[in-house]
Length: 324
Image (tube, rainbow, N blue to C red; front, side, top):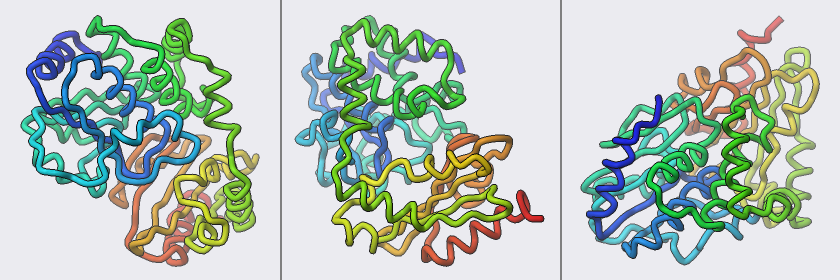
């Protein structure tokens, strides 16, 4: 879609007429989610509204410097929100324990870049051509004519940087780079951000990462790589699930691998599945079959089953693509 000025005018007329505003991101937040949610929070601050942030899950260690923890709600209270922004979410279920906050909102607004988004809000600004929700949000911010300060620019940069894999994924366009150059002009210190996001792993997190890597299995002539992040690995290394980042990308770096898969064992007997692809296989279509979604080269879903059973299911699922 092409972002229209009248969409933005409608949204910010609602903002100006609101007292209570909610901003929600998806559960198990990543850089695009945290960057976008906190950027919008920072952007709205000068309007002197009551703004609550909802993110289900711990903020990973490498994003803590960018998240204002005291702004993030621990539980839903009885506030009625004039508007609720939902960022980087393809459906309400992705809000996790905060999905019912939608029932406390007079108007819901979704800003997202996932092609599997079902346009579930009252107002939907969805653009699958965008590299990230952060990039789309930046366009919206510019159209308001309001000031984008250095902190907001930095948060948008975090969102774009992480969801493009340091500008290496195919979702990175020439326009993405132009917008990033504008953010740098606004004061973003790219070296500081890079050190915070990518060069700050504690030793216990590195050890947990290594344990995950040790478990990699390669199937179908090494075209399909799979491993798991189990509760045992996390407990042994005193790490949390959100801290163990980059495993699925590590597997994809193997030359022969065309699809990488990481299974994440959750506390409630579910297994989260993350998929990454290199060539022609559309992992978002595969994820849709299991009730998930995402992008052609990066997608995921959740299954109510054990890691062991889910591993067998995934190996069997990709047999039709790679089986000899």
